[in-house]
Image (tube, rainbow, N blue to C red):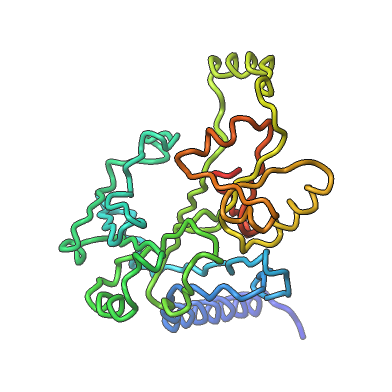
Length: 298
């Protein structure tokens, strides 16, 4: 077949028309996208969406799938975004935005707070752009209440699932499928990631103070070696570790779990510092091993 400029031009036009039709078809038939919060698999850890058998101490959340409808992008264009905090955080009434001074952010570029308004008034539900729910069983409304509430939400309103607990300590989220759009947790892959703490650069004065502390003998006046204060006896990994450690050095265990080590020692929370001030070292472990779960114990 002889190739001519006219034939090349005609074939090029045909290819462009087909590509355009396919693009239009993709846009017109794009399914409605919702967010799914899947159930944390029992005794499983998720790796790239597939469960693999792991010890019970390594239970992990699957990645939360968060895809937002095009209508939500209008939030970025609003001069002010209204955030409704619908539940308590355990017993705390006002718990969002109260520690802005400890944010360690450049408010002008990273955290433009003037763009947001936080309210706890449920009467403003219909006008709210984001609605935050704490995942704890004592705070999260019933499924019946949530479904009823969802009937009155606007198409652009986003619901936020908030939890700072590990999957082991969080109620099963599977019944909430189709209700929530965004996640706010300690995990780095959450939509709103809020780690328990962060590394920040030291000021020159702080560096000098740290250097001075290197010459301090913190063991002075302390007669005992190692202490551990523990009340959750379910985490067998750390219990086994301390049992093994006790074979080699003396470890004094305090709290309700101390009875399992043959020498009960009770130390109330208000008396903790007094109990521990005699010890050179203090053991601290997370109660579960989950991705990104690093709390104030660290």
